[in-house]
Length: 102
Image (cartoon, rainbow, N blue to C red; front, top):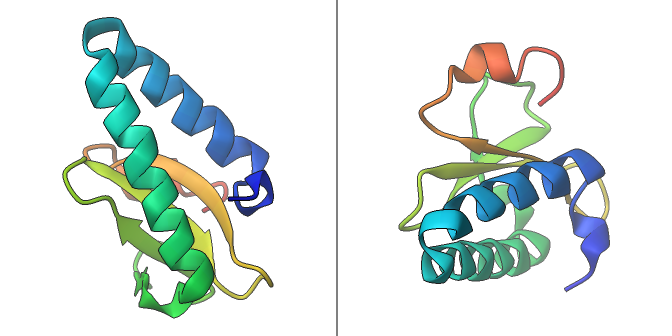
């Protein structure tokens, strides 16, 4: 899987979350990374499977919930190939977190 599917900001956010989780549970952090990679493969194959959330971002940005983890991947589905632009925890105030850039 090419690292180019992840925008630098999304890579930083993912790295920060995985590092934080690994402090208490390295296996859970590894599982998170594996879940993200599986999701990224599906996003590359079919970016429009990710959900539009017009209340949060313009239509070009779509949201993918990670199964088993409380995180969202925010995808620029119009970019070719699609790009994961953000990695955010679902408990955050999403309108505020995504206000500056999805």
